[in-house]
Image 1 (cartoon, rainbow, N blue to C red):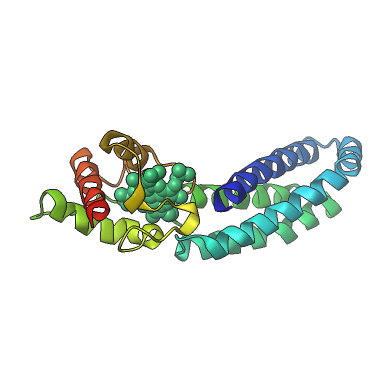
Image 2: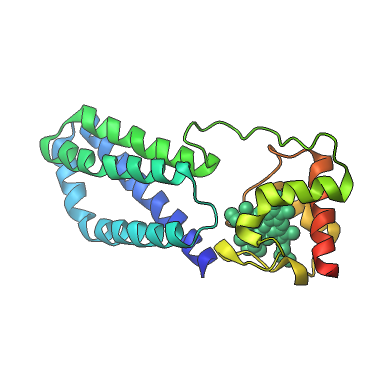
Length: 207
Ligand code: HEC
């Protein structure tokens, strides 16, 4: 369910951005007649897209395991962009349209990086720890919000780690590259740390 919602959200947000880009472009180059025609023609699809945008977004915000300051900043930024966009196209005001577009792009950046400053996450410090010990520290810091301390929590569409049928290498690939709601950890963890955390995940299975 969560994964389906996530894919629908990404799809409708992309469609929304494409429509918005076309409208902003027509506005900025001064093709106001064309803009009005385009707005009229796309009125119904746009209403459907915006509604799905909001509904899937609310669902994801409620059921996501990763809630933090970034999510509130993102919601605030999206909320600000809406009245700006309405004013921009009603009053044919270029600056408002561009500002609103910047807000939307910023919100997209926050979503991708899960950080209001869009900074890449700092490498995780496991100094002094090795192997499964290091893996446990990483697991507690990075993984429990979706997988739970025993691996059985299935937030954000996560899989039960204690019954995973994946091989060590397949698990490494998922932690490295991410999958659906699970983000990629290749920037936050070293290759060794990814290996360690997967080794720890494998101990959850034994218990
Ligand atoms: C935002 C929530 C979230 C966080 C945080 C998270 N995961 Fe996941 N994890 C998921 C989701 C969702 C899936 C299922 C992906 C899919 O197959 O659609 C998953 C799948 C996995 C799988 C594959 C399980 C299987 O059998 O398919 C492994 C292994 C895994 N996660 C390990 C980790 C580790 C290790 C961490 C911490 C470094 C972590 N996860 C952090 C959400 C999360």
